[in-house]
Picture 1 (cartoon, rainbow, N blue to C red):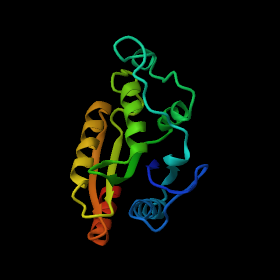
Picture 2: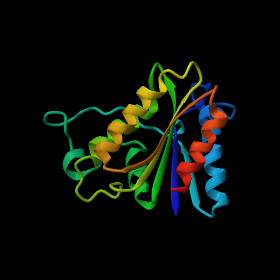
Picture 3: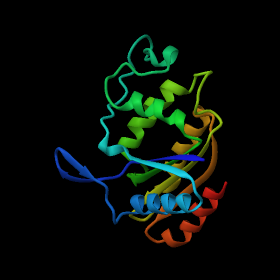
Length: 187
């Protein structure tokens, strides 16, 4: 089994450099996933999406649909198309985002907006039917995790994936939610 983990958190070092926040909830969840999957002999790749150049959707073309609707690629020249194509190589996905203002991070919204446009109406989708685990990590009160997971429900609906885990993680429940992450990984 090949698993792709996409995380959407970072620390800004300077305006040209991002590093993963290795003490934060998002990275801690990534670590749990990587460790448990590797223990089971699974092939795992982690991409920190904030290190990638992913521009916002321009809703180009007629009525907001450019070539993404017909050709299932984006016309923009950035890292999106390579990552989208690379997703074909995996059996399942784990998406881990921090929660900002009751929503997934800005970089997650940007990536998933473009992913939905390119894949939602793709009859030959390589993503359709694959298993997906979504983790929303809130460092504050945790009250925004459910709204973030609802956004993942929408993503799941349009991508036609099989969501096997939707896990809200806060600084208060991280230890107990690790067990839920591990259970979802078993599926």
